[in-house]
Length: 72
Image 1: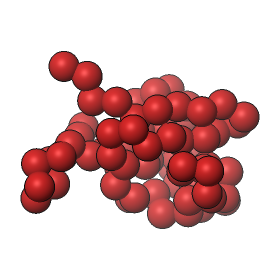
Image 2: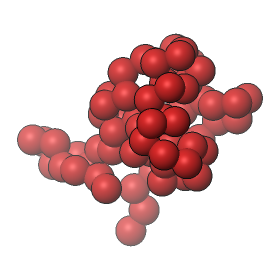
Image 3: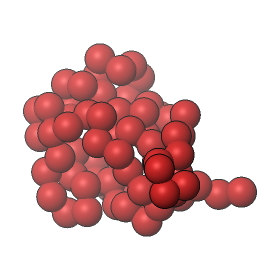
């Protein structure tokens, strides 16, 4: 689900993050809520569903915040 960047830092796409955390049921739902401006990334509206998220980013959705973490 996550993919390493050239610098070796793990990332995950915004739409994948929403699905992985059960915030949406399908990729189609993720696309609709992201492109509809319903998702925040670090306090700013993010409309790119393939936006790469990094460790520590904050995703806001439906009044809740979720921190991006790649635990081991």
